[in-house]
Length: 150
Image (cartoon, rainbow, N blue to C red; front, side):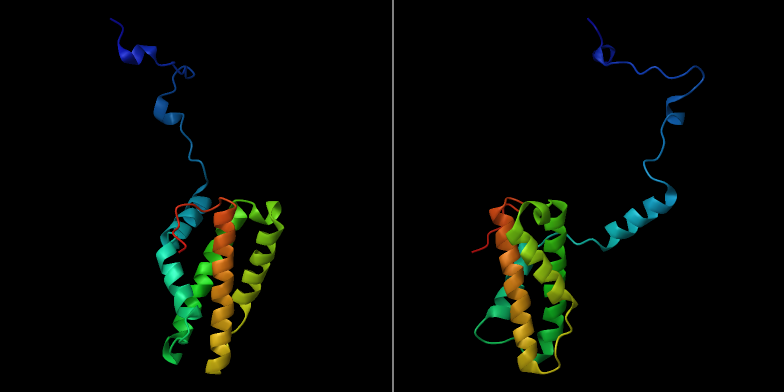
């Protein structure tokens, strides 16, 4: 009987070189630190939180004034995450509707929310509408799946 490991292809190393000497890190230390920093602040996509925030902003009863800034920050985060998903899947290149939504999302994220509570609600609703539209577009194009957007 042949040992299972004998069926694996052998990798010949130059004479005198041990296997551990043949490995090189994929990135230099500066790039590895940059990747580690990004991983530390990364938050996974949470469709339930996104849909809750959209519902809060678009509800018939506007969000309380004391919660508007916090909701705006979360909606900005949802916009950024959806734009990143769209860009990574090249939706901006493949789909003109997605490109339009991406540009709108970027514009809305950069706008400063008004101190007037009524205007702030309008801004929140515009952001929430864009979040919802971009989510639906990414679902329609298959860039996102398994999201219950009911």
